[in-house]
Image (tube, rainbow, N blue to C red; front, side):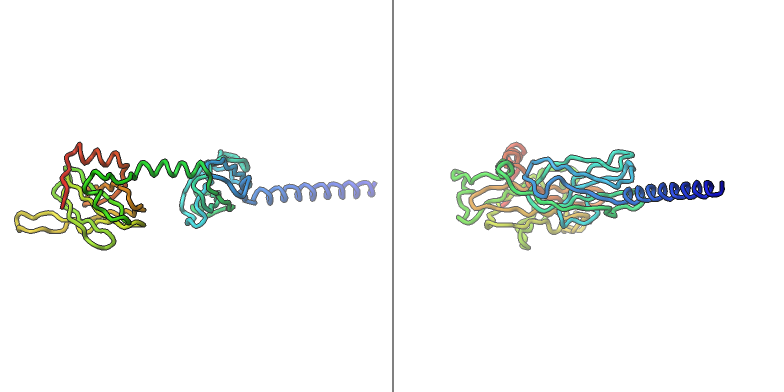
Length: 278
């Protein structure tokens, strides 16, 4: 009788230990955060399957795809994880060629931008990408028009950039300096444009001082500026570009510069009756 009791107690103890081992192993696996992609290399436009495991099942947790050198607080292309899902898969689309990382953010509400797991992959170019890039470029650049005296006069290694500014009631009294590669080109009032020959290559434009005329003191003075405008264009020899300047007021004046589609830029100059600065 005593032997039977000892054997039963030993069996119970063994089963308890086995159960604890299984539970502990399960917890260890559940705590392992992991993200992987179904391939190491993709072509532009391909679907990317991202598998995840070890997730906390919290609805504000998420996974993103960002350039490999991006800081950990950059969102990139992201998706939230399904609530209560500890593992699963999400589908993304391969973007521009380059090196990327998949990053998982578990317990985001508590930990913020702490990466729980990451995995690297590469996107290569493809005929589809090259066509998409060429199609996009045609929206923002066009060949010079030999019948246009301004465009025909540029050098063979130059492009031409039209910088245009429309009227905006809140900032019509403010003039903006236009700077190219550190040199002031002009001071633009509203409803004007300038034509700037630029050497082929990357060309940086920015705004300098924003000024207005003080009637009481009979002089120009700078206004309180919250933001300067900046734009870097990749200029090709023999091509034309349109750069829009915006000056607005939001508790202080700010400037912004944006590349505009060439058809839209030409329409603004003609339809709004902008005056050229010489």
